[in-house]
Image 1 (tube, rainbow, N blue to C red):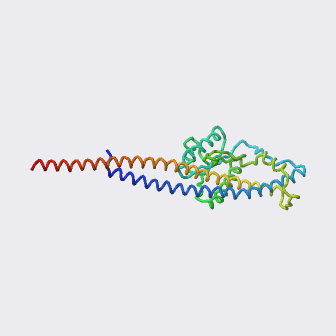
Image 2 (image 1 turned 120 degrees about the vertical axis):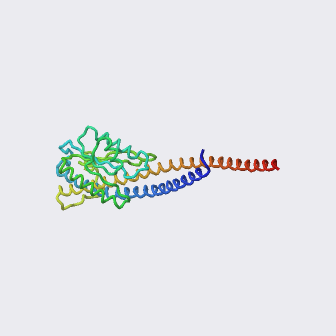
Image 3 (image 1 turned 90 degrees about the vertical axis):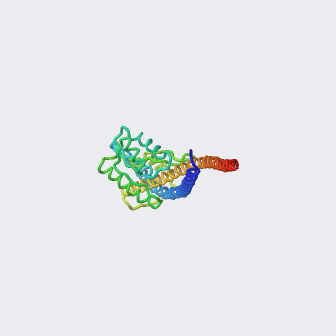
Length: 292
């Protein structure tokens, strides 16, 4: 049977946990908007890169040249999986790990992982990573991490014979906090290049450039790689915090229900204690009166 003291301690502990949960809810709410703004800001630069590729591809087409090759010539693939380093975000890591596993099983794939928790799940399924990175704690750290990943991809292509690279990550869509998706990084998708080459130029004349076309193409591909990975990380981090916010909201409801139960039990126990003490006083008084 729980005592009043133990019930009081349980109520105090529950209140402390509730305070922590509310703090985490506030932090997640702020972080979601922070990463969404970072992803939106990168959209303008993505448009600039697309315009550069559009101008270069249109010039190639007018010169009678074909689109850049999209056949890597090798079946070996690279896969980058973005998860999380922190917990308390529901099934966020389980979702992306299961999604990535379906693309790893039975294939010759070099694996790169961002996030220790999703790495643990993939290792439990027998998939070892060539590289593991930690996620940044703020928007300022995304650019540095993206640069590290790009260098890693370059090393894969040179040393491991990787021909195509994709990234999988969770994305927040409407009420769904974590919906997994895959994006191809290299080589550039043929449909994407065809659409750019056939899209009408928004101005009256195409821009001129002095750089060698092949060098310019290589530079633009690197910039697009930066854009896609950056936006994927920003989307994944926003999705992580959205999942954590949903988990904290559910936890807060459970805590409130637990507090209500504890308060009800505490009131019953307190009333029982008061009644018992009153009965003891009355019984003692009656015993003393009869003894006289």
